[in-house]
Image (tube, rainbow, N blue to C red; front, side):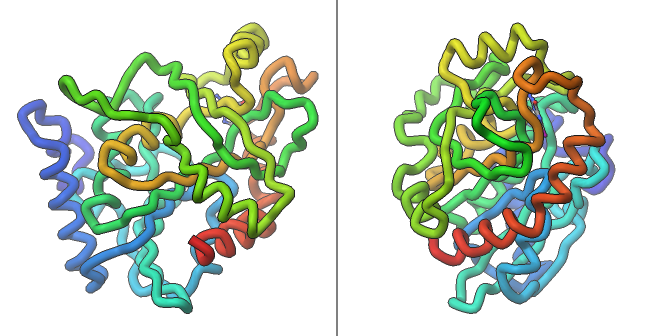
Amino acid sequence: MTDIHDNPLDDPNADPFQVAALAAADIARLSGVEKHDIALTLGSGWGKAADLLGETVATIPATEATGFSKPALEGHVGTLRSILTPTGTRVLVIGARTHYYEGHGVRRVVHSVRTAAATGARIMVLTNGAGGIRETWKPGQPVLISDHVNLTADSPLEGANFVDLTDLYSARLRDIARNVDPSLDEGVYTQFRGPHYETPAEVQMAKAIGGHIVGMSTALEAIAAREAGMEILGFSLITNLAAGIQKTPLSHAEVIEAGREAEPVISALLARVVEAL
Ligand code: 8IG
């Protein structure tokens, strides 16, 4: 199942939860760890957190787990890591995100989240790099996600499955994060399809409908995590102010550079928060 052209999730008759269960079994077999407690998806800028969390018990190329896609983007390490923290918590670190804009469908996008749930994880920590709408925010600043507006016009849920999204981004977990760093601000994440960045007019629309953060990944994943019964903590690294908020054009190189600079600080913060969960 390592060939991108032979992904079982692409079979419309496949049950995505069954594929996730197979992936979880792959992870258990390859890592020797039967059950994980917390799962953590590392977006751009957050990659160093894994090293700070504890002992890496196993590093698995994501393509060794059923249903995972090859990484599409440079800077996104396509590995699954099993980490044992000093307090004995098992953390599954997902360094292999499939974005909605890749066009492989929403099942592939949320497969890592469903797999995390199938490994036993009860808490899903989702991190990303994103644009900031609040003028007071600075590139390199981490913020908590308090809620989201899903502008993809899509859902990872199939059929008449009316999942409640009140308190989607757990107030309890946000409180724990703020105990670790009281200076953490929070905001509403608006997910656009991408991969283009927004026009300034779209950023103004996002602001008018209550958004503070613009991104391309996390809302769909959070919905799937909630469907799977997990408690969710979301973090955005503001790598740039959104189009028209910052006066200069957005560039992917700048975004990567902002992530690289912030990485040591926010990774240390994230490791401390995960340890406190
Ligand atoms: I990094 O400004 C990053 N990801 N939609 N807009 C959207 N996604 C982003 C942005 C941004 N910056």
